[in-house]
Each structure stands twice: as C-alpha cells, then as structure tokens.
Length: 215
Image (tube, rainbow, N blue to C red; front, side):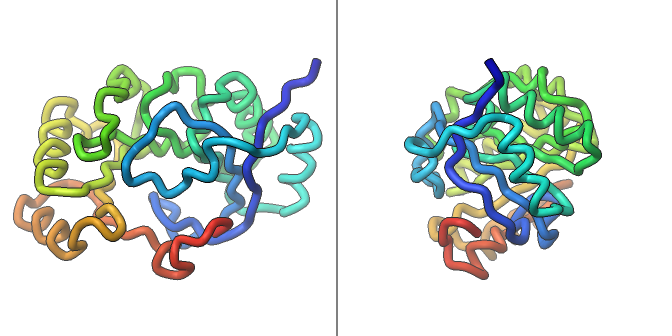
C-alpha cells in the first residue's frame, strides 16, 4: 500500500516568518497535533483534512512550480513516517524544503537537506513539558529554533535555554512576540538591552492578512 497523508490545506503565499520570510512559498499543512498551546493559531488543523495518496500529493505540489516548500501543521511529524517520506521525495527532486515543527517529536529521521524550524515551548504556552530537548543535537546552522514569547517570564526562560544548550552557537535563534499578547516593542527592547544573539521577528502574514487561513 502506498503512503498517504492527511492534509488540511495546500496554498501558495509569502513565508511570514523564519529566515525565508517574504519568500514566495508553497505551504503543505498536515492535519493533527498532539499539543494544545494556548496561543495556537492553527486549531483548524487539529482535525478533519483530506487523505492524499503520496503520488497525487507530489503531483499537486509540482503543479505550483514552487520556489520553496514549507511542510507545516498542526504538527507535521504527528504523521511521522509518511511526512519524512514526502520531504525526502521533494528533496530528491531538487526542491528547497523546510519543516515547521513543535519540538515535541523526534526530528532525527528528517532528511538532512530539509531546513528544520523547531519551537521550544516557553512556560506560558502551557506545553513546556512536551519539549524534547534531545532534538537540539540534530540541529545545525541551516536550522532554526523559535521561541514564541508571551511574557517576561517566557523571555527569561528562553535566555536560560540559550545558555544551557549554547543554542546561538549551534543554530539560528528566533524570538517572536505572541500576536496580541505582548507589546512587540517591549520584547525588542529586552533583546537590545541584553544584546542577545537572536533574530527578532514579527509574523508578517498576520500583519498582511489579519491571521486569515490560507495565508
């Protein structure tokens, strides 16, 4: 039996975050997630979706002639084996591929050609206990760790993780203010004051399209 994946949506837009921000990107949003972060903006991807056979899905992706492909969710690695298979196929075909993952599921099986954008969940997310810190061993300078910051407590916690795991030496670090929950300028000023080796990042897609699905 051929592999298949449950897909919530496939759409072409601009990447709103990470190092490829602003780049035209094809998003393949997989259905399902074992986490329930309080600030989640893709709850519609927890359930539902449509099953796609692998060959049909790859053909659909190819029809967009994408510059870059982002596999996202939900949590795409909740469908671990077929998700990893899809990314390997796309890399074999020469596409630039990234994955957005929660950091709660083992990433060691992700193809080394895929750029991994991995969250570490801060305390106010409600899901800090799901962080799988062994994943840090599988990150390099082509990957990124993202902290979504809701409060000063989250910020101080993120700084401690950076120190403990030497994150800035291993990979790229992003700090993003939780949309609508913290003053963006305040977070920017904390980063400047501490001279943190991170990239401050607003979610561009929310500014442009007001958090609408499919953007």
